[in-house]
Image: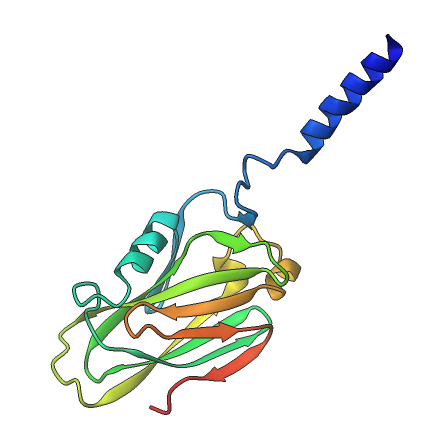
Length: 177
């Protein structure tokens, strides 16, 4: 009788310890809830639905209001800098779209879409450079700064279909302007 009790207790204990957390069904860590942070010329969204929309509409003419090109991605510690060429005299605001998840791989990874929203884009021949400076400690909430330093980021241009891989501290030039 004691053997059956011990076996049953051990069996249920193993079931509980092997059960995945309900908060993390796909091996991801990240934020709890949706938020947005607006800085200078960009707004960062931590929003899975907005991320899925950007992914589904990526490269489509009705989604892409203006032609931009990621020129350079640089990361020093937890400051991420994205340099983007846009048409001169064109009023552009950027959406940085994150699904709110950190993929628990080795190393951990996160994906950010860059989407340009534009007005008054008449002169498409000349270019100007916009510089987006993202303080990851302020914008990627609920992740401690030491864990954040270890995350590799993939920056995805929502219209030019360019992906830039930023591993650790990086300095990646994509276009020559």
